[in-house]
Image (cartoon, rainbow, N blue to C red; front, top):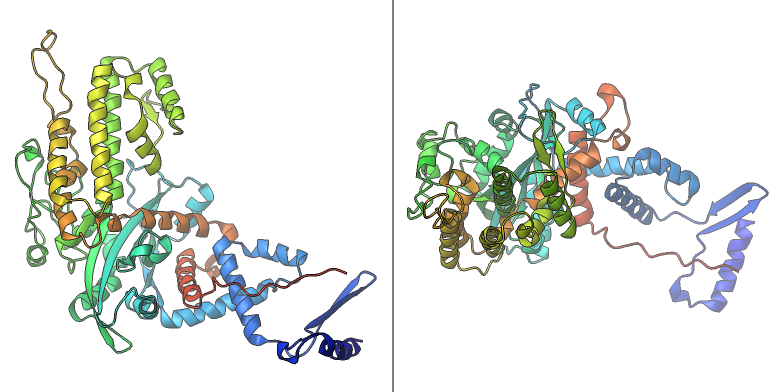
Length: 560
């Protein structure tokens, strides 16, 4: 019957279509009672089939569709390729990409050092348990392999120029708190030359990944291969298709990760600054200048050449003036300090009661910020930890006059507005570094405004804050940002924001440590989530190079 339909189609199509249109009968479909039949006509186009299967793998990756969920879909829609077909196609892509960008597993310490002060970023007990299972293993993708794979496409898009073979590579790292037991730690790189995509998480390539402790020992072990390759890139470059590329290396992260990689003290130490030799005893002198004075060459000769340094820097091939603080964390941490100082003032005045807390919550609701207070077991009051955009709303719009006397509220509002202006200036590549330095110094003097007159007398005017209220982030805002702004004006300090890296870390933990999204197998036979994440990273590069963003021509469906 199908042969007869094919013959009739061939004859009739000649009357309605030009031969150059190449009309082709691909299948015949019909039903008899409860049975449905679909008969393919002619030889199957294997190239189209492969393309569709790979596009399906990409769609499943993008939507994070589990194997069981996809199987259920195929029972409803028989046009979808079978799950085993998709799995085989994914395996083929993984094998092809692993031959180009090798994934190496690294044995890691099993013990975990927890920090009881830090709050969890992820609470889901299933995710916490799955991350704990993966402790003791790290994954690594060769930075050289990734560059060999991606640079030709960057040349094609005119991002890189082989006539000027210089690549600007920024390293970043982030540790995500999974419950109170473990961290999910990742190290990435992004090519700064791809200016339009530096804030896209997909363009921050994961090179090192492990669950465990965010400490010097773990990072030293997990990044050994990576650091060897970076050393080679900085010294001899990398030949890609006959062109020898040289590299400018940069590093950016939050304070804790940066200090660990630098082999340096924590931020609450007596000598707290990674860039200069200031001590806590000297922070009150607003007239003192603190330029970037430390040199990586000195640390390479003697790791404790400066006070506060205790171990060899892990990225000793990157000069210290190429270690750039994350502008996002500057905003987050200084806003935290300003908010905590305002609350402390209310508590000191004795007005931190139920009425005051209710007023604060209502004001937060007015500016569209979800916020609440609660009392801990020890009777102390805690409050919602705000995210970045909510902190900016508070910084800009919170009416301090609702909780403080108007004259006092106006002075503190002036301080808050001044910091907001500085933060916006940091993100603006056209900002004049000299003007920023002046404005930052003026803001610091306002922050440290002393009280005048005699307490409890009419001539007393309350000042603002004390030198003890200053934080390391305020120090770098005032004394180092202008210098780094001048040094890296080609990119602007916004290019060193770690928001995309933190987002990528959160996505990886949330998407790959659910049991329902894991590959098949039980116990030791089940593939490590760390390996799955790095395979996923490889597949994203595969999709990008093969341009699967272009959709296959849709079928025009008609009914008669």
